Length: 68
Image (tube, rainbow, N blue to C red):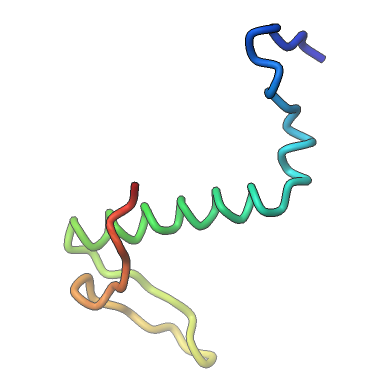
């Protein structure tokens, strides 16, 4: 394993990061939010699975806040 520079003692291994479920959930949520925002801004629909069916959501109906 690579040495962690002393100026960055908070750096954790990828294994440790993946075991941090809150961190993983936050990263996935942020990624999905950014993707939804991009679709909305580009005027592209998204497709979801709802009640056993494929449903197309037009960009004007995508409910998402501007990402940080």
